[in-house]
Length: 239
Ligand code: HEM
Image 1 (tube, helix red, strand yellow):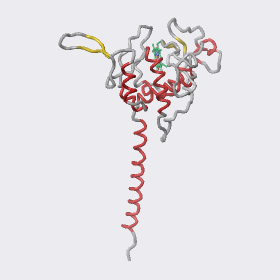
Image 2: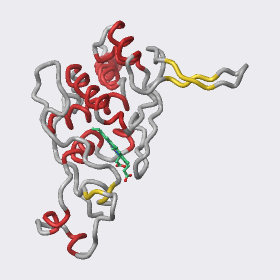
Image 3: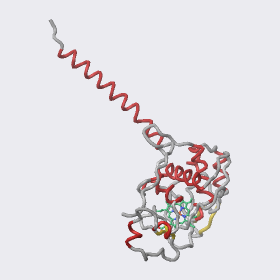
Image 4: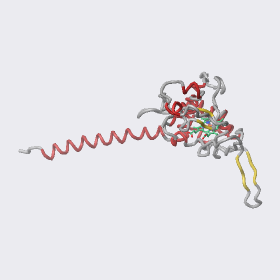
């Protein structure tokens, strides 16, 4: 394996005590909405799930209604197919992509790709030119095959398993997305935020899962102490 290991970046949800940062998830959603959703679907997620990010019902209703791709409808009586504006209960609608390659649905990609959020962040910020990369340190594969070229229609990215992928660099300039919380929308920040958002779509119950662990551990500890005291009592010398 010659592709690069993801860059080590810290996320609020790392570790046993980590939780999602809702402001970051909202920024990440905005990046998905304005950039990634042009090519990638998010079919496991329903609009109303966005209330978990801190949006209220009216905001979710508006986001659904104004979503670019409409909900598909089918009338079984007439066989007519059509569309209508999305409702909060609808899942994010399919995306029709005419370019080269096959953009995967992003709902679970943070779980299905090794490295998760760190991998997505590195992929989005890792586009580089192949020649410069080859001349750097330790780029074994490209040194072994000095004539290997990135095929037409593919883009070189050392974090991608095959090194060349069909996704053109999606985040190219600072301020590409306008954040409403005042955070500076650098390319790196947008990549971090959308990676966090896609971690939430892949595991919306992450916070809850971590929280339930502690009472369980506390119970086990208390049970151990009781068992120890009971043992001392049972085996005590009784005169
Ligand atoms: C693949 C994320 C925007 C087209 C991927 C993959 C991820 C991803 C995680 C999978 C890589 C892998 O297989 O390991 C994103 C994010 C975006 C974004 C977070 C927004 C910031 C776009 C846009 C387009 C696009 C705007 C279309 C112009 C593709 C294609 C692939 C892909 C065609 C398949 C690549 C291949 O297998 O060769 N994307 N993407 N993506 N994306 Fe995107």
